[in-house]
Image (cartoon, rainbow, N blue to C red):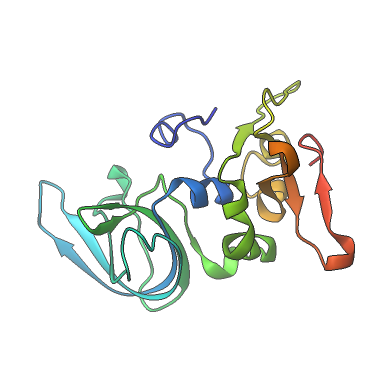
Length: 198
């Protein structure tokens, strides 16, 4: 169950809730990786990726513009490998001492692999769910236990990733503080669904 950001990776929970990463990370950007350099700053080193930032979605108060992303040099230490001059990525991370760090416990995905609903969520909807919690359901029965929870059921049928619910819905706060799954549609077909529906 994910109740804290720090314990997220250690619990083994799937890394698929884009809205979770939007809410829980200091910085969320879309960028193209244009270079890399291995820094010999410890026993294993740090990889410094140079990025061309396309858009910043979150993190303005922490850093004005991202030029470099830092990660452990080794994947076995949760370091991330990016392709150079190939793709745009959605990169999430944290700021320490003015530098943006990411790793395998963050969400770093090629932009073209995101669904339209996820792209819209990043631009407009995920900030509406900042007071909501995603509660994973690993087996039935499972229930929400408070009004600020959305029940995540992708693990029941899709083993967590890239489940339909994760790719097409956003957990947002509704009236009276209740959180529920929202699927953005055209204006005439907007749908808000019960937390147990998807």
